[in-house]
Image 1: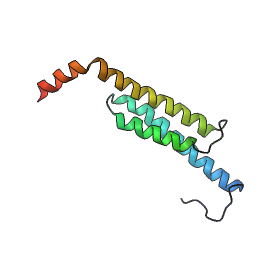
Image 2: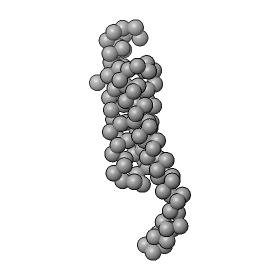
Image 3: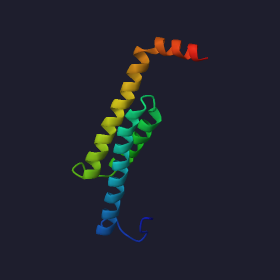
Image 4: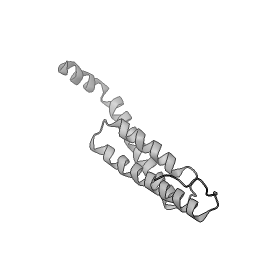
Amino acid sequence: MSEPTHSSPHDPVHNAFQEGRRIGLATAALALGVVSFLNLLGLEKSILAIVLALLAMQGAEPVTAAFRRGRTALMVSAVHVLTIVVVLVLFHDKLLQLLHKLS
């Protein structure tokens, strides 16, 4: 579905379209952020969730559902990225030993 080309930014249909797009992006970001915890080293899912959350929050009012859902997705994804960094820093020697055994 494409955005109507002849509507102004103050048009209620245009605003509803934009809000629906933002809510969809925020929902996708939140779902992706939660799913990224299923595979601990799946950093790419968290990065994609962060990008989707930022797109959803862009231009949204702070009181809208899209902004709140995008902010939640951003926090969940940031926690996942932080968890991966902490695990890699704390267990880097054990991970290197495991990689050495596998090769």
